[in-house]
Image 1 (tube, rainbow, N blue to C red):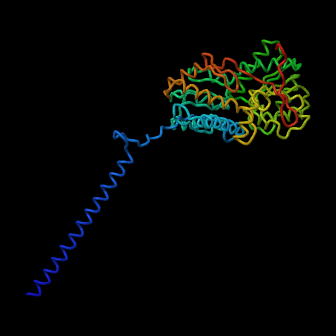
Image 2: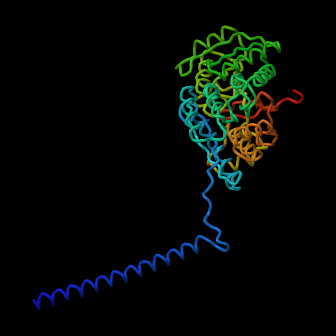
Image 3: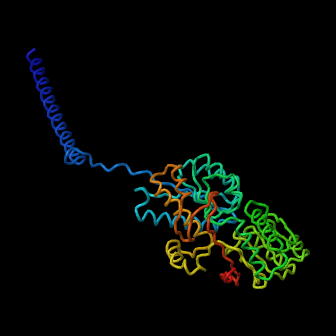
Length: 408
């Protein structure tokens, strides 16, 4: 019995010892926790008890650009993205807009209407404030309703078909002059180059058709005979039938209003069939790939009506160098317009003082600024008040700028 009592006493003593150690551990743990609370509280507050935790970073202001990243017009689309990113990077280097960073969200329309619709919905889902893309009008036109319903204003960089203005939306603004102005420009130059009979060829899509229609109307108004209006098929391996039709009509000037992929083949076929007259192409074709694989005999007397071509324009020398430093290649057609579209959008957001769609739309409509492409302001229908076009002359593997005659 004595042994049992002694053993019980030892067990009780051990329990007491372990309880004491546990209590000490609780005290230490509590002290550490209290110390941590004091330290972290001190880090999180300063005089007056005000929190100095940095406020959550504001969401970036997102601009969406929808251009052809795949497909036959992808070189132009990629160059436009580079120019738009350059404008965004420059803005962010200066602190952004409204104390928020700018983010460019890129969508691929492949110059295809169906692809463009899907890509436009994707951009809207990413909460873009302004759409600043647009190359092929046939792909841009079906996105008008999508952006309109989402209350996203559009500063259209390159597309310039009058179909863009047909819905009469007050939220669509064109950086480039419309096809009506380009058609008049083309006819004036066709006459100055000695043309008397004009054949007009398009590819059946929005921009080429509306440019062709505008050109025919201008030709009739300016007493230039139109021998034929022809349509070729995109992607066809040969256009000899169209070339023969141009020849049989007796035209001394052929004006192709589509894009450079088809223009390249059309020029080769025209020359192969013996056409000796002047060949003009519209601004959708006046780009480097137009001349790929064409020899001197094929590019002789080849001209293009064009938007801005920065490396050929002395006033854009500094900008061209900035682009080359940022991207690593020379800027081509469409780059200045893509750069300006971003800056027009950012200028409007800055003046609006918010990203509210109605306020931004109103600010864009009231734009009056000097951009790389010149003075930018808009007519009530969204067209640019002072559009500018160039005439380029093909020389070997490149182009030269043809100076506008004085007083013309």
